[in-house]
Length: 120
Figure 1 (cartoon, rainbow, N blue to C red):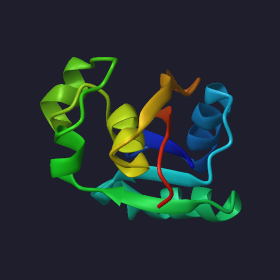
Figure 2 (cartoon, rainbow, N blue to C red):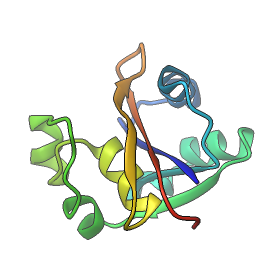
Figure 3 (tube, one colour):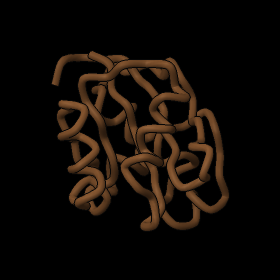
């Protein structure tokens, strides 16, 4: 299974998410975001238009993952070095492996990271 984890600002659009995913150069079957972001209309629209399954990642799961990149803003707000990487790894399961570290959309409103792991 390939999981794309996302972090994104409230001002992000489906195009922001799509651009971040495109920059990762992977084709996931599952997308993941923090619980509060996974429930947003823009994330649902993005998932539906790309026929992707959404996984909502809990705060505890986000904070339990060690990420390869470190953002002081992400650390301060979410308690993790990279929201995108933490979401991808948490959603991919215990044997998850990061295959693409955090990439940023051209508009700077979304990040995406890719992990492989167990089936959901």
